[in-house]
Amino acid sequence: MISLRIFDLGIALLYFVAAIQVLAGFLFRQKKLQSLGNYLTVAGFGLHSIDLGLQYFFYFKETLVQSQFYFSLLAWAFLLVFFLLWFRLKLKFLSLIAAPLALILFSSSLAISPKVIPIPPRLSGLWFALHIGTLFISMGFLAMAFGAGIAYLYLEKKIKTKSRLSSFSKDLPSLTAFDRANHLAVTWGFPLFTVGTLSGFIWAAFTWKKIFTWDPKEILAIIIWLLYAYLFHQRLALGWKGRKPAKLAIIIFVLTVISMLGVNFLIPTHHSFKP
Image (cartoon, rainbow, N blue to C red; front, side, top):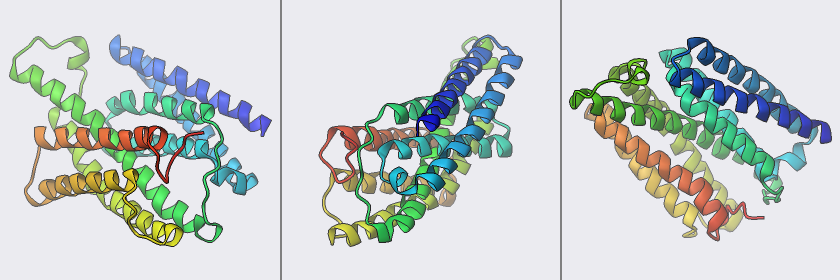
């Protein structure tokens, strides 16, 4: 485990340098720095994938019941979604969101106390694959929609008020590109979030003998799902574009962060990560 810890520190260092390079590249309009930051993020992601695989195959029982593993997995899921959107939309700008978030989440995974989370052995495989896997990927889509939404609102305000565009603003993609990122994040992310939420309630029924226990995490999950469903419906059925879906995606992502960090660490809940 000590060798894996050193490996983890190497990954964190790669993510840190990558985040700095990406930020500096955009601020100073240095495409070489942007590219270097993205290459370092790819390198960190590759080592991170190996790290997760090693933990899973060699320390299966210990790993799946430790909360820091799930923060590490969430960082990996965010980057996976970023690479998918980057490949599909060529939106390098989203690395400004993906690289720092990966750094924060992965670093947090190294700092969290290794508290044991009880998972019924006969359900752990199903719970991991459906509940955690789908929810984390859908959160990755929401994170990218959050970044695209912030950029959309910022750029739209600049255009509407006819403000002078800074060098940074001139390098931003078009409003249409940001709206496409929101569209993909919603159409791909919502079905995954639905599967993750439903599998969580099924797991709760086996674990606590009740589908719904009024746990703060469950209440917030339903609120997030309703808002996400509304956004999904409005985009696909009514053709929402632009400001409204951008704002709602931002709100939904903020609520998922509150659910992940605020509820899990500060409020008594079945999903508590408090040491």
